[in-house]
Image (cartoon, rainbow, N blue to C red; front, top):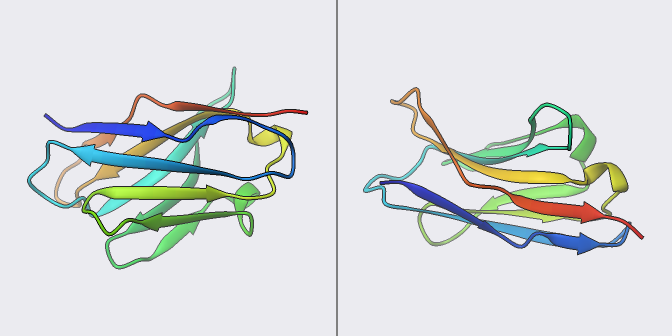
Length: 117
């Protein structure tokens, strides 16, 4: 059974940084794509960033230049470095993982990020 566990969320002041981590366990295979999505309260879930096995990345427009996604040395880990955080970055952040040959996307339970002074 695949399980994605996120960590690193919390309360931070505007302009500061946070680093989110996600580890996927229970899969004998490497995920082709891992990423981060977020859902502000009362709004739809949106793309933050995704990264492929080869290192290709894609970012949501609102985080370009401020957030960096990377994959860890351990298999099926992914990080999100968030710099210069803004109040509008406040949301629940979800880790995602997907294999190219499957239609199913796996999701973590989410970690709350709150940016407030």
